Length: 147
Image (tube, rainbow, N blue to C red; front, side):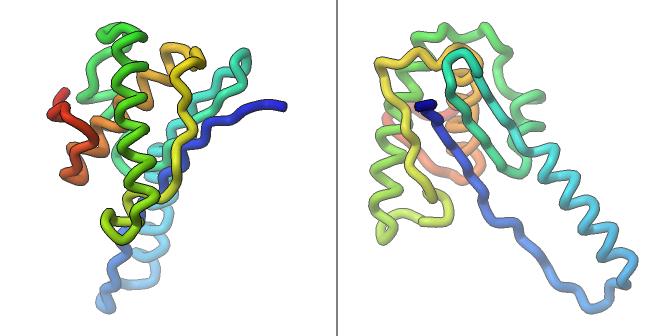
């Protein structure tokens, strides 16, 4: 049976109502939002290892290409260690919806330290955690999130 690691983070879109807008501008806004969603969906799949991560987050894809350190900057061991620590904290917050915002921490992440997920999965997961911490002013662990 295939094992999938799903990170499906759909954080709410702010939809504003403005009664002075015309119907044609609303359809343009819907088209723009659809483009943003398709551009901000990052899918990381490794068919050989049978793992998959899907990240749906407005602005993450742009941030990843424009601000994140390039691939190869970090070692895979560094990324695995940080990801494991971030995942532990993330999963603890998912289990405490009264203490932490359940809109930010929606689903648990099944990330196991003994499995080699490959560099690409670890790189994008690590960068998502950095993006998440900087964007939502959160701190997942003892490390100050920075680029």
